[in-house]
Length: 501
Image 1: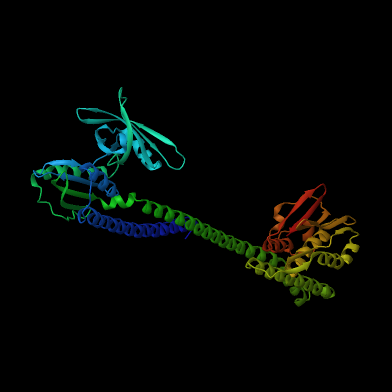
Image 2 (image 1 turned 60 degrees about the vertical axis):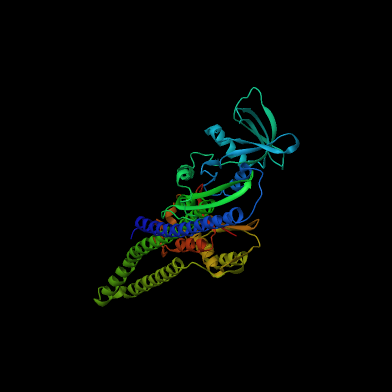
């Protein structure tokens, strides 16, 4: 399976799990909404239909029960003895006249436009109380002019204007109830159905059951009670409530919050999984490519010494030139040494390529560098090189054996490649919490990044006995330590370096 198909497959698996999780959240939220709705029904029944309560008027009762039942679409209708609607719940305000006595009620429904609805909803959400109301009276009807809201915390105010009244009274608005203000809400159809149903009940009042569950997608509750407390008259109160559970569920804050959290979790987890999978896939792909290239290069490098050994052995066996047999044996010996070195380097490179962790210890880099310079002193003298060493006293947490090999490869590479009688600069300098090791030597031409590849050898190195693996091994060592490394071409010279931390 290629990387694209693997990513698509992983994304589909994550999507399936996301949909399954979403279904669980929806089911849980749906159950919670229906349970809360039924609990609301029984609570309201206990508080308003099974207990004796005193009210000043029908409107006073309607405001109280409307605010108690506004969590879900509800309509409360009061019928007189003739089964005629005497009052019905809606958006209204109690008005306190002089002396603080509540004596008037302002019905707002027919005055609420879409613009006013937006302001009312915003005011109800942001402000604590309805403070003042201006109004006028025409033919026993109270017409709202302007309502002022404020808050206890910082006394901010917001005004909602209904009409520009030439003459109006200003009084204290005590209690209020807003019902079905937003006509674009998904609950508006429930309110409309309940209002129409109440009007039809004028003829069939008493036929309505006290507790009715509608179709599977609709939950509908009804309750009827007789109240004898208003003006010594007997009234019948009918409360009906109806919801669409699926719409209530997907519109609930709990469901929205849970879905956002779920989405965030799946995006985060999905991103991490895809990154890990792609990283693993690319690493595996690079490893396979490296193994393929390594195998081809190794076969190519082993081919030459094997051909030489085969040729020299044939010469000895066929006694082509008996006098040259010692020379043939020497050539065979040298090529076998080269093959041994090549195989050892191949094994070392392969081990480093498949290693993710290394054991580290506190190591003196300065001692390692000084020891390596001493190790190559005879070669340095033979080539007529002059070594300029600038070594600070530095200790770092690293793998001493591997870092020693990296330093060895840098220095040996410089000794082998530097022209005779030239300078080699070796520096180990402390830089804050890091240190920089570098080896600079003269070269015939600028180098390219190919020097880090396995079996790469320049023309001069091919004349010697190099296996072309030194810098490739060094690269693996420094990457395992997460050290920054590289080389810089300078005027007639090159500087190899690494920065330890």
